Image (cartoon, rainbow, N blue to C red; front, side, top):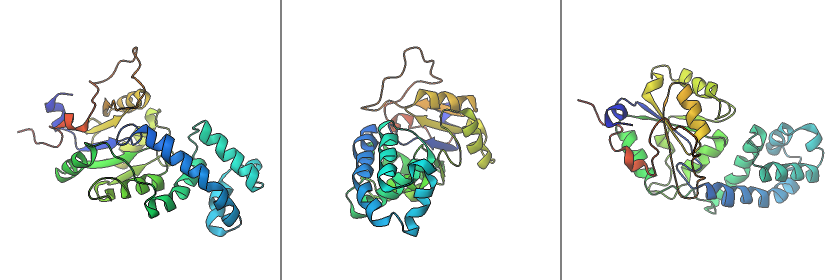
Length: 243
């Protein structure tokens, strides 16, 4: 996008995995952590009220007993199935790891500084991830940045429950409808996933694909709506006034 086009942006919609932090953090840290702590949680909390909401959200035939429940959980994680009841439970399981400091989100070096700059410039920062809203807030509250808690920068949180699947343009229309004071072309969506970028573009948003270390290459036959970036620092004119 040209600097002039960037200057009209009033809101930035951000993906998480592969955009603000490495894919490996989710795949190699968060997912295994949840799998490893689940057996103890099932043993200690299976019949407790605080766990029942998560247990009852699973299909009836998969929540008859702890062993069946765990097997279904492991299968979903292995296949990276993005269903709401799995994402909600993962967020619940990660809470203790974040609280103790065992888990800390490794943001890419350019992310925190740029988010602070955009926030100070008056841009609205919004998160949209397949992970639950609760999990999103945990991640941004426990980062490797200074300050560690960056949740104060974020004014909106969306997941597959309150917005929809990230590869469908209707989901981005839902997000736009929740912020009616900002026009579609005044939004900028940043994501590593070309299908998500295309969906946001179809909804009228400006969209830029993000290429980060560890991400899958962008498809050769995919027509990007704009030049990919490798760092948020490439968007230096974002948040500046167009006089």
